[in-house]
Image (cartoon, rainbow, N blue to C red):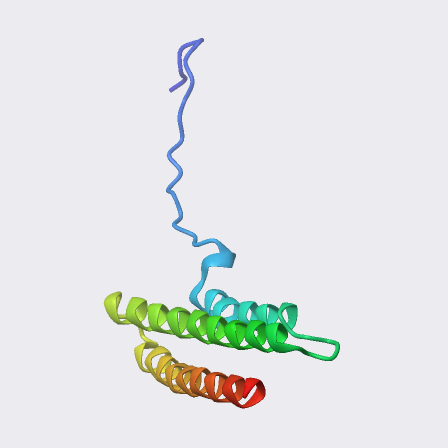
Length: 118
């Protein structure tokens, strides 16, 4: 059977729900736990003889980097728990390790700042 002239046939193509590569949990985790905090620490580092303002800037960048890593790891763990994906235990374990390490980094940044300024 042929179609009449002037009419078009429409083929139905199913939409594939492909997630963009840059928003996958491993890429977000690497960027938020490793890459962005590292870039922030390197940008705020003092490459010369540090003075009081340099010590304060480095301490604040340490705290900001730790908070960014802890929020990223916690958000990924909560996301995996909510969607009940297969890697729940893995993301929860990574979040716990990052939370402990971030808390220790924040504590040591404060102690180090007090010792360097005092």
